[in-house]
Image (cartoon, rainbow, N blue to C red; front, side, top):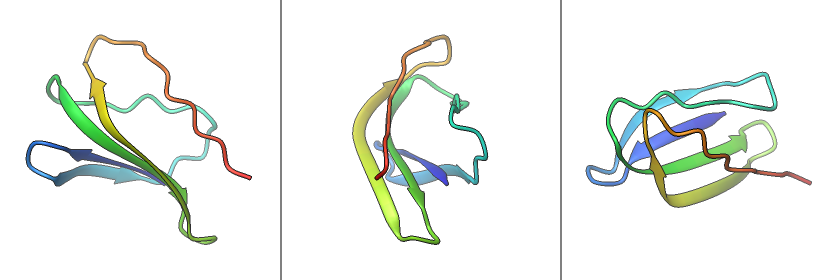
Length: 66
């Protein structure tokens, strides 16, 4: 599961259950986001705050789980 929160408003932009190992989140404006990635079945979550995601950017955030 990938959840994207807008840090300005602290609102959930969207959440998706992703099957692949790579995912490019679609954002609707250049802003700062909190990205929450996890497995709700195992209750394992990783949180990355202050991510500057831009519509045209190809940056990579790597998240690994045990």
